Length: 366
Ligand SMILES: NC(=O)c1ccc[n+]([C@@H]2O[C@H](COP(=O)([O-])OP(=O)(O)OC[C@H]3O[C@@H](n4cnc5c(N)ncnc54)[C@H](OP(=O)(O)O)[C@@H]3O)[C@@H](O)[C@H]2O)c1
Image (cartoon, rainbow, N blue to C red; front, top):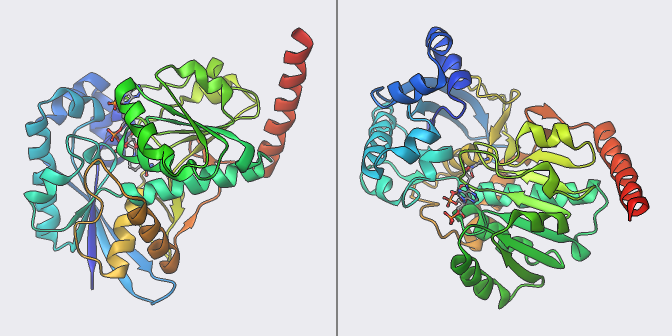
């Protein structure tokens, strides 16, 4: 049977460590977990069973393995040290006999986004970023539809636009909308991206290093590698949609709590084909996975055992190809969720209603 492995790591240190080691999660505080994670070896988490392609009937198994570092630790430690730990974790995948290895969350963000890691391992590696981009853009399109925001006249924004996922999402959205903000921290990199995109983009492209321009956007796709939230409630216009792909999140629960007139959705969750059992609770309802996990699984179902998405420059061709492969095997965008809860039609109706009210209040105050 073909197999895959996927590297996860603690994102919210206390919550995530408790999921595997309840006692440690209880007695250690966040700073202690950060500190001790440096000395922890890679951890075997679970076997994944029950995945079955809808089109070919092929069944595969996999494993979750964990790199113990938290995002903060990965940013603080020297790159070489972090690579070393991820490669060690990858060797565990090789010992288990995995045919392909996926890099979850920050293990794909660090350094050159998987290139060095893949060079040091025999097992083929993918970051999962191509399918993450495909699913994020699909989610924004779908959210625009349910919120009755016409895409072709919409103003959208990509936050973290100069990043690996952000760049290619911007490229795809530039075909859909009328105006597109590219938001990041480095003006020169943003301008370079605008020059590249504007050659074939339908949208007018505006670059900014300021978050307050978000008040112009109806559709916001946010995908930074910040370790704290970067989107504030006061940045947003009534009726707008925030699709948050980043882990840790860019939009905190406070944004949704403070604003009942905007829709905040999690980017990157998909239904997995077959009666899958992950034998580990990573915070999703059963049968659902992050898009980056899904890319790894889809490649295993397809028998594409090669380095697939690596590096900081994703191509639109790869995004479209993996989207096709995943669809064929039965992966689907998984409704909307917001902060680990399903978004119901009633909530969407309420957001639209509250947005109309907020707009009227704003006009009345002018
Ligand atoms: N949901 C999923 O399935 C899934 C899958 C894969 C990855 N992810 C998440 O997606 C995010 C991005 O991944 P990536 O590979 O695209 O990362 P990346 O290539 O490192 O890009 C990150 C971008 O974020 C920007 N940034 C970093 N810190 C910031 C801050 N404090 N304020 C504003 N912008 C900031 C960076 O700007 P500079 O260019 O100025 O550094 C860069 O443009 C990560 O959170 C990762 O965990 C999610």
